Image 1 (cartoon, rainbow, N blue to C red):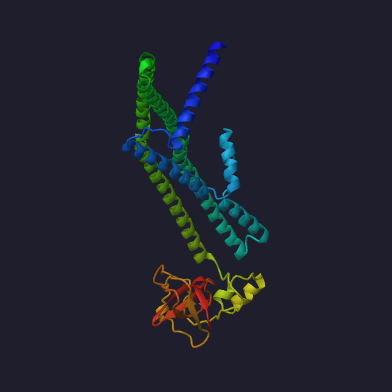
Image 2 (cartoon, one colour):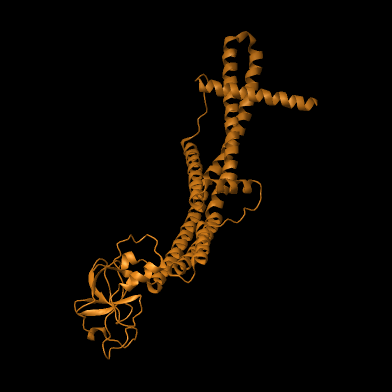
Length: 383
């Protein structure tokens, strides 16, 4: 008990001395030992690294999980050392809704078929997003957190110790200065004050040694920030690679979906493709779809002419009929798959018509002396 009380009293005395020294420094009443310029630069770079690492970490978390409630939940699970429950991505949830809508509205209808195709793609996008989040969390966020919760805490602890050692050193310098001033004023008590000066000098030497040792330890930790930058650079490169892979997967999935919809869907939006005056986005019934599709002109049978779906057809030999043709504006660029198709450029005007037995997804288009099959979904029929 006596030992504990003595230690407690000693710690209280040290704390009080440091508090007095710190207060006098703030008011300019005491001298302060300044660190060298290189050391100050190391401190500034460490502080900057810590601050920007925190900002990058938080914003990356927002990028990977925009929902703040979900981020708080994940944070609590991590602090409790519990496994974060698997969460459905927005793409996977959208895919689920589209699949359920298709089953209820009719999976065999054009709208239902399209919902299924888009839903399957959204599911793939959601899976790609999940992989990206997992990869970014392991290869990028985890190293940043490890720095803030490990290395930076060690640096902060050693800096606090260095600050205390500096206060102790400056307090010893102040005591020695006061002892020497008192000795000069009281020459008659030289022996007494000489003892005080010797004691103050001994305390100063001890304080200087402890300060120098702690300064060296802190300096080594601060110089390790360069290694931290190298590690974070490698993690940043891995994050970029993961993100590039994710966006490349998304692009491929959407390109495949676009090709599927462009090559397999029928006349889904009559307002766009057959001149209907209703907006293209307005919902249409099956009856109106059938009525609108019927407005595409069908040319009379030409004797001896092969079917438009046959590969042997030579459209350059087919004369443009005098009636039943329509003007159409091209909505998107289209690259012909073979010689039987007509390449299209967005916003150009062409003449189109239908032949008996043709696939309803296709029309015959003519530009100048060139004829070929063109997909209906790329056209807006004008007249």
